[in-house]
Image (cartoon, rainbow, N blue to C red; front, side, top):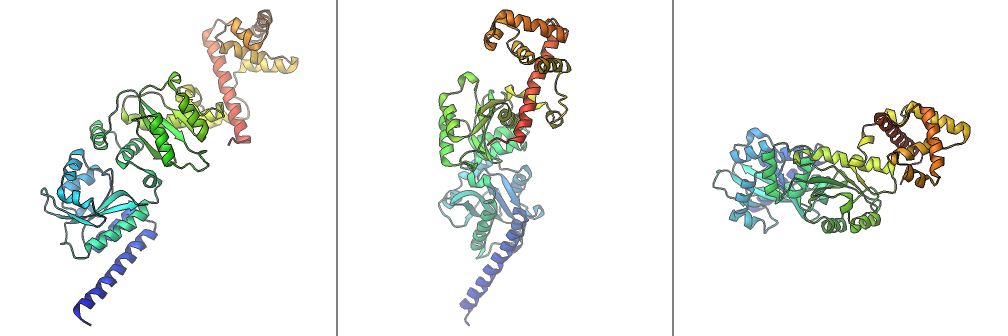
Length: 424
């Protein structure tokens, strides 16, 4: 057997061993770190994975990395705007971007050799795997071995719906980092915004689009992307935890909700929760949770309503499950129970009459019109209510307590009813 044939056989055996070792790490279920560490051991050099937002996703043993630039990137968890801008100008990087093969990068700042291979999911690049020549010189087959690594990493990263759905990873990863509270330093936030090409003012809202009933699948497809861009031009969004989260810069009061948005929600079956306004991006997580609660509580209060403002449901968010599902009805104001007892005995409707009266800010005319009764009839009923409750309706604090009790009781009853007969 001649030398070249020996090399071919040896190379084939190495490739099969390499692929089998990586595949074993992949099927072990230990995740990216296990695959990357296995690749580093086989390639005999450090390996780093970063996505298209230049966030560090995984890396091998840090003690093997003597490249100060990449050590700093790993420490921060992402690459700075200045780093990204400098790398993008490198001729070797610009040439490498045009090819699907692994390519070598030359950098004047550090002497370590660098080999990069693209990570693609469904034909879309989602990141890169970097081989650093810190420990040993590169070998002839390292290009091909790194490509195999990228393929295995793509399989692992493709399990994540975020990478499958993301279109602009720089933008979407930034929003996800805010939602995960990974960004709490305003200087870092500003740097990441520059990298993602984002600018925000000081009238921020979190909009949460619940995809649960969108064609029964909750998927984020191109149609939704295009429609949301039309409805909210310039507002970045991402697929997060099975829903769409958008950061909207500007007022979106009830008066400004467009007919097109209402039609979009009705046509798609999507529900929308809108947070209160905030100014600091470090508060994104809190307002995301608020918009999520707006959808949850709104589906109880008004099941047919697809748009809910957090400001409209804040009262109910304070209620614990123990209160909501307490069969003893402890959420009723004890004095209002007197009205219910009276109604039961006399087949009257004082309980509802008093609620309408309070809801209309104790306006006699509006209340009588809503109840379709004469003002004298209403006056008679209110006199009776006054005697039963021992109040003359002048105590504002007591009136507020009554009204809150009505709202809480109605919500608890709807919540309990919904558990008995679940909505769609």
